[in-house]
Length: 614
Image 1 (cartoon, helix red, strand yellow):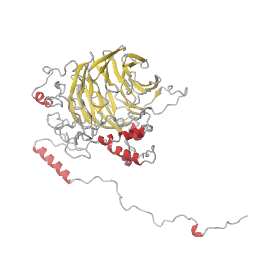
Image 2 (spheres, helix red, strand yellow):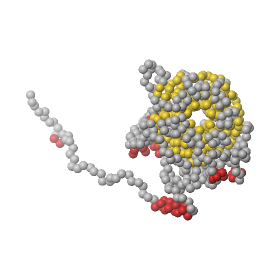
Image 3 (cartoon, rainbow, N blue to C red):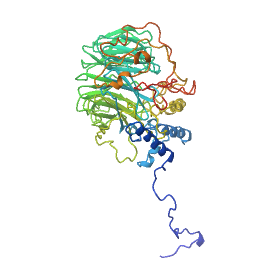
Image 4 (cartoon, rainbow, N blue to C red):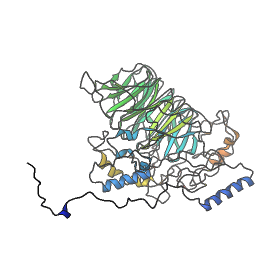
């Protein structure tokens, strides 16, 4: 039966497909992004500078831009996002295209996405003018600079924004083997190959020095309250020292061979040590007794690292494995196999459950522990044993990677190696066609940068005025982050696996302070002369080193035969001078930089004043 259904709607109410008379075509912005216009004034300034150099008989060096990784844009976007987001867990989706690189937020904005913290993109190689192996590296507590300790006994300070040279100091007479800042950021303790321990203020003023061990000191770690620190030595002992009095409190004996590393728990009275006898021992620092011993490794334990929440301990060994132990059950959680030779160093990411290890073949491996692996035999979390690397940099260095450290915000990784270089690595960019995320990594270029250590070096830094040294250009940028530290602690502590149950965790930059410059403290009467080193040239013989007497140093020619001992053997009595803060926005208007914020600034290696801000 065929019948038509009557239409009850008027004809003009029946929807019809839209008809387009014409198609829209763009009228503006038809070309891609163009380079910025040439600044005539800047070009004229460059030409005049080149003419002056030619008049002085100097060769003209071409001005080149310097690569930089600036976190301020991402931090500003994160602060605005926290203010305007629709719900507390909202995070905008990252799009895999280069134009969206500017929307990349710091790692703290992605609590459940560990892939945003894999630092596999090569940025920069920094090398001292006098090439020697770099044994230890650390970020200064406020995250503006990188401090390295070398086999020649020198501290070298690198800018954390443009990665160029800032200053150098002959701190020890033998190879520096360990150093660490106090948790407050007010002091630095370092130890060397001859067993000497030294205290430094942030302005590199030497406060104290004494003979701590008979043999080389391999590890140094501060207690959570900074009142004590522990040292590990090749004399097979661990010693606990009272920091303020420089007094030995206890000697821990129990290892049968050289003790290669020691780490204090981030929040508890617990020590862990690794030795050449293949053992990992846990100690009670109050009584000096061994609490537990782990026998899993088959060769020397080279490095140990506590996770930020203190529940896991990672160990690197010469048996080519990295092992992760859970101290709550005192069981082995993971065995990480991927290195082709012995593992020399290990560190944790400050935000995400990512472990980074460095090997003697020069490889840097990233391990992601964020999720459990499938196990066919048992559902216990302690049943999985092997775990492949999440990202591999097989040619990160040409030799042993002795030390690794992350920026407090987690967006940059610094590696120090036996090949005399310090290298910086950042996160991959979304949509980057040159990404080496999983291809085994590319070999960094051979071009090394020794900028700031030559007389005629002129660098153009993006976003900064031409013609000045890039050193210290970060300035007071961290002061804006200091004010948001509390808000970020409360806002993100619940989503991070690192967060303590009792109290939340912040950005990992707890040492950002806000009361201006540190006082210079009493001048040290120990003049540490710069010992001669192979490769030293005549230009370096009249260095002015910060913190030392200028007249005495410049009027004498130091040599290994005539130079007096740089430090007295024996502790200096009395308490340390009060050191207020590293950095901040309070105090005075120029007081945001403890390393170089003093009036007059630092001097460079030629004895003259530093260019630019310092």
